[in-house]
Length: 306
Image (spheres, rainbow, N blue to C red):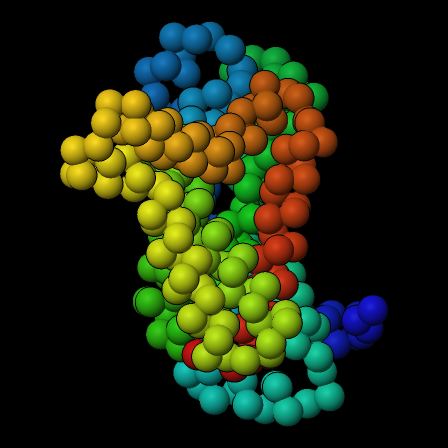
């Protein structure tokens, strides 16, 4: 069992929080986050036509808002350390890789939690002035926002670990978040998520048994190719002018592939929170996804693959 020194994690967390709150960028982020979420919630005709004191109008666009705001505050978490050369000092100290990853993650999560808390106070004040919001519904809704942000932070942290360029880290994080937002609504996004997960599973499985970096990369590429073949089986069948039943079987396999990974859609697991229902399966989706991605960050940091 891996040991965990909470003093080390706490020290990294406090350092990053001081960086965020000691920099005007942190306050700009909070201000913009309040403005965008407030505009999405209250500056829409649907909010007034529904005549209900809830955040249904915000619920429909919050995944897109977080897709861009979360990578913006996460992109420097690892990338900035490497760009400034402070990663070498940090990683030569008596700390474990998973402690560094957890401390960095909690630092970004702390900043996001603070932003969400201030946003909640502002929005609940408006709703209380206009009507009588249901406290249980509001708690579930903001719990869903927080869990979604926690998952997106883990995705963005992987992007920040892969690149020392903050802009590239932002793009990688935003693309990863966007795939989960679009999965279930756009077929190519569901297929893309499936292919990436298959490639990642193959790479990690190979590394677990072989501990070889080159073999791990090859296994990942093979998994990527295998997932692509399954997903595009419909197209291959049509191009080869196969028999009608063969084309139908290929199309069905491709559709099943997309349907399987469409269940990883963020919106599908967030909708119940917006309705005031907290389901264990949805909580496990967000929490389990974050844990798996933090493990991936630890793996990348341990292999120094950047």
